Image (cartoon, rainbow, N blue to C red; front, side, top):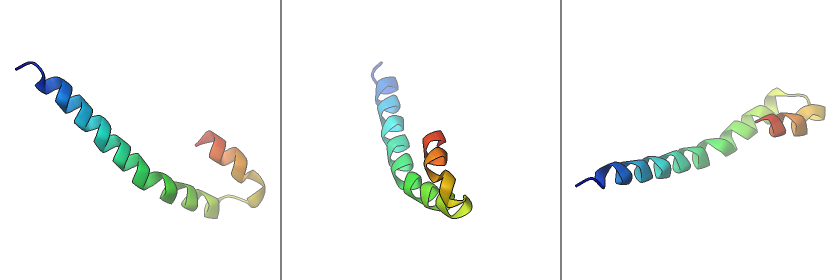
Amino acid sequence: MKCYGYVAVWILFALYGVFMGLIEGIQKAFLTKLLPKGVNGTAFGCL
C-alpha cells in the first residue's frame, strides 16, 4: 500500500487551497485599511 503517501500529499494540497481561499480576501481587506491609498496597487503586487 504505497499510495497512502500520494493521497496524503493531495489532501494537504486541497487543505492548503481551502486555507488560502479563506484567508486571501481577509488579508487584502486588512492591507487596504493599513496602507495609504496611493500605494495599494504596489502592496497588492508584492503580496
